[in-house]
Image 1 (cartoon, rainbow over the protein chains, first blue to last red):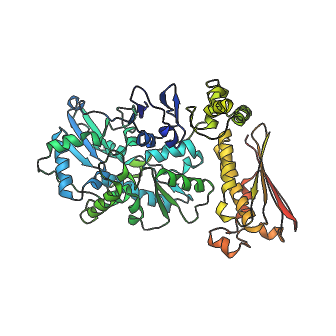
Image 2 (cartoon, rainbow over the protein chains, first blue to last red; image 1 turned 45 degrees about the vertical axis):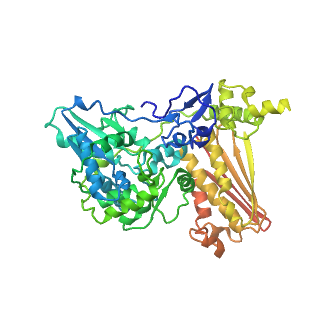
Image 3 (spheres, each protein chain N blue to C red; image 1 turned 90 degrees about the horizontal axis):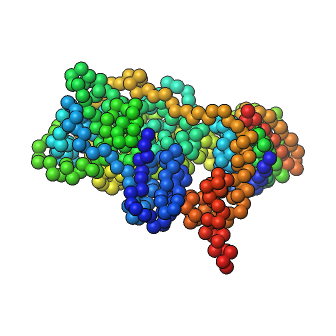
Length: 395
Length: 138
């Protein structure tokens, strides 16, 4: 998989806002350049939002690839409904999207809804004490990087958009030679799920497009004509943090939005101290997927808008089999763990850390004193790069 | 070998879990395998909460040897556990109403600690209780 968030300007002013915003210490600033560690980056967009010169960006695919396919499909994110208060307007948008050149626009709220319902069924049919819903790629990556003990608690389900793409491909197989499936994305993390542009080659989604990039096209092409569409209520429940428990009979669920709050809860979950809660639904963005960066509206206004669809949302949840959505849970392969070497490394880092001031100011370009100490041990940095120690010498 | 020690104050519910979070962070930094870490986290949290609820306060000591094996010592200054056998019975609890209101005191603390640790030792008298638990990483 290729790097998704990149620094796009020639030089950065080293304000360190991205460094401080990153929840997983994935960023360092080296010789005036922002360096993102791909392994630790969880695609949460905190750095993108923090960068005051808008230098950090994640770009989706463009649409100039459409001509190479015999039949093209656009998958519509359910969260898009939060950008408009009425169905008629959404249907003019969908019509405009079709006019871009798509043969079909496909709503996926019925699949999102089905997976949402599967979560509850899974909880009532197994006796696992705590599960974490898995529809946010950022959360899944956060758990892998920072809370690996909880990796086995993530529900073993595929992402709704991936399931949708798989089903579309199955339906069209044999009818068209080359089917192109485009996922219109409401957030940065969702860009990572497709084959292009970031190289998740196992996916059924061909291209991931930031929906914000086609808003201008939609505006130009909408002409009052409507593409009739039905939405599924449970699918809406699943993408809005505030609505998560509305569609579930059991109330032993906890929905949490925003990475700060999510991390507080994961911290407790690692101590197995979430009593009376069996299902955690976690969203990186404010108020759930409707807070995705590529959407137009404010997520709190969006919540009011999307709630209005409850009255008209009459599409039943998709009839899916467990095999349709099952995904093997991710595991971390440690290989042979050499604890002796790891202990020695830890002690060496601590030795360096003792020499540093411990302010975690980031002025050296590393996100914390510990991060710098590690680089010193690895031979990539010297203690002379610490700005605080330098200024103390001068005084 | 490296040693850390942390203070625990009597009935300081606001800071409940703070020491366990620190212990967990240190062990993650070292890279203790997750299967062992899970057990340590659960035991440490239970024992820390026990100290806050039941004891007059004390100290938690974390020892990590050169091979990454972990020893945790929870030493408080009283009042001791009058009936150890009962305290090791699932569901038995003497937690205060305040503690129960906060969701603590389900009476599984000591039982859980013993269940997840590799060795468990409990010494108690009116002048204090010391629980020593160890975890092997290999």
